Length: 129
Image (cartoon, rainbow, N blue to C red; front, side, top):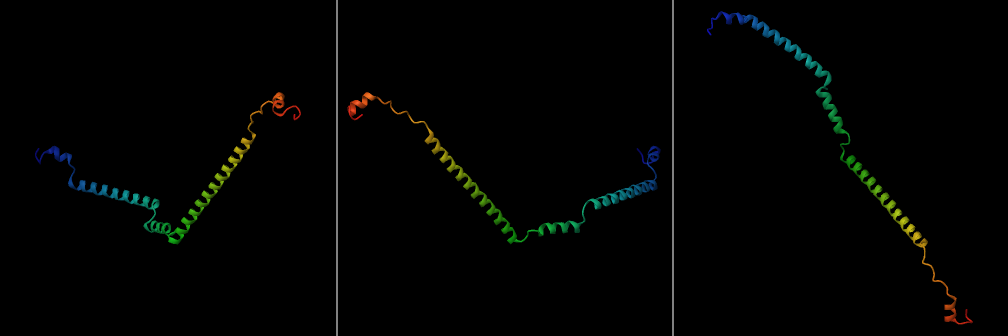
């Protein structure tokens, strides 16, 4: 195709129209970009707000002494809970032993051998019976 082809010249708009169209598109994109920035500014906190929030979060409980006190309190609670559990288990064990002892006392004893009067006579004699 040659540069002077009449079909090509008719399809390409003049240079001034292309520049105007390009500028209009860029202006529209600029407005859209400004709208997006405005929406984000309403949704996202500013840098100063985010920094203040982070500082507040980091400041609470930052003292080493406070952290140690909290850990010691938690350890004491755990130890007290373990002692209570051990005491409950020991109480339960002693109750079980008492129940076993009571059950052993209640078990049926084998019957005594029958008393045979003749055997008593043979071993003790007539007068001792």
